[in-house]
Amino acid sequence: DIQMTQSPASLSASVGETVTITCRASENIYSYLAWYQQKQGKSPQLLVYNAKTLAEGVPSRFSGSGSGTQFSLKINSLQPEDFGSYYCQHHYGTPYTFGGGTKLEI
Amino acid sequence: EVQLQQSGAELVKPGASVKLSCTASGFNIKDTYMHWVKQRPEQGLEWIGRIDPANGNTKYDPKFQGKATITADTSSNTAYLQLSSLTSEDTAVYYCTRWLLWYFDVWGAGTTVTVSS
Image 1: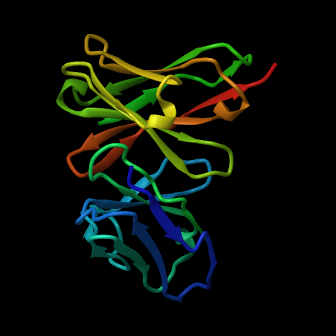
Image 2: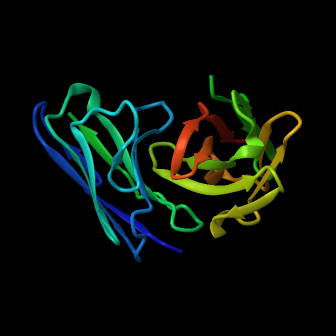
Image 3: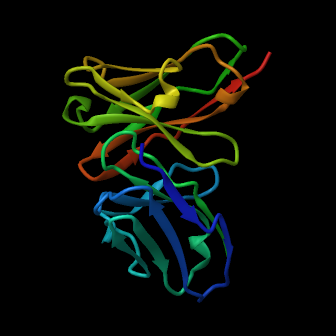
């Protein structure tokens, strides 16, 4: 099974800063990767799919990059509403493993 | 509007089983794959498995094999997750979600399962 290693596990940043979250796959998953944001007590919401395609309605300050085994999610000019947890998830065959998550505190 | 309506919270005793439901509206579950995801308190997301409602074919993460059973009833447009031999490790929120080619695009609100005597 493919393992997804996400870092950092937690992150504290200020409004206006730029942060980057990384996700590493244990084997080549090409671009079969999505990023989700989850607010406390809510269901996850899609941010990025196919590694770098922004989901509809997601602000352009979010961007995804990478392919193969190394991926990243970058958030430019952090806004207060960006706090929450972020998860990467691959879909290169089952099981569709999630990364361990990154908790972003603003 | 595309929605997934999940059943209410469950309080179950250790060793018991529970069956959660996820009813879709605004789309036909036969046209997609339905997945279930587990989230323990203050923990990350774990993919449990998925079903193709058109033919009942299922796939599971190996660690949930024997613990979880996913089924679907296309007549009621509902997917189900049954959990057996419950322990405290099964206390979690369980989400159903729709797979749309490249990603999970619609999620249910989650069902909280608490295992306690």
